[in-house]
Image (cartoon, rainbow, N blue to C red; front, side):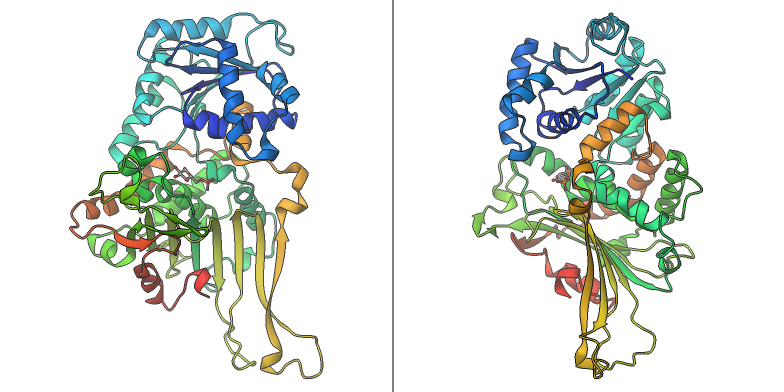
Length: 494
Ligand code: BG6
């Protein structure tokens, strides 16, 4: 199946930081279908060769084992093309259509046009409406065309709906693929396998057995050079509205009737609709926002957020959010779900911790530690099941001091090393193949905005602003106080 992949925003950060390395890996692993072309589109004039040089230089910033050798790059570069486009000019879209339709000599195409065209919008989202409308007018929206939309999809409910309207004026829902790159991470797919490929967990996956669930997406990095973007966005829109909520839906959803994209997305949507709506009182009680101040990360001093490049000195943008919510249905009633994300935290650590209830009647006094399942997304990809076991199994091993915590530790990176595919690589391959399971449907995305909007609204009326926290820690103390009210602690405090 031959393909043309068009990258709008072809010289931008996302293209060279994430997409090109992912495409190169797919190429290196022989996973890209034959007869493919990758066309980068951007504002300035440059030749195909100049673009290839630009990308080759950018690969220097990629981790060493993901960098191509000269021969590998030469082979990969044959796929790369470049085209200047002014995105407001209808004539430039007609030119693109001619380029897509013209017969080419690529192997596997039989001299015709590509079987599939994927249009990846890696531009600022305010351009999505104009690009989609122009693509529609130029008839680059036939059934073999798909459009991939990169987050942020709007900055609130109204702007997200406006983007959806523009997209749907040119493309059907099946043609519009909304990316959440967390869904492409192997651990997230594994979560589906864990829950619905094993009989073991389902009977326990409910309020009777589970005390609380914690989703942490912690980063060590600060906002870097993205200060102007980040300051308009903040952690709630950047990480919670999309990545953290998507993980929550995967954890909390009911078993879907099949693995079809819509069967799964219907269940995820139900979870989003079951989330307890925020009132101003709940925002004040159950949401903590923070902003990092100068501190030490990895033994090195780092700036506070207000001293980052392109951040206004009086910014009230949050770089940390911790919140408590509930999924209001029979399975989860009363079980707290804690979501937390932040920049400049102590560790890069994305994980979901499922804390089980304690045994109902302890017969080993002093050892009431409950079981917990830790689903690790990064830096490693694995699963830990924490249990209590008897040390040594000797005759006196039932004495309390002889019980000891142990964990079953599955390292999927090691177990499946040769088959592991990175998040963007997975999603790009799926977009080309037309597999929709790992893309977000518009109704899910709209519902997620609907849920976060009262928080944004409450913050806009709040005179206090985010709480400062020291870079290199775990965020404001109020985040610990929030879970302590339920008698809980965050994973690193246990
Ligand atoms: C992006 C956010 O969606 O996800 C970034 O815009 C964040 O701010 C990134 O750094 C984190 O992704 P990952 O895969 O590195 O955890």
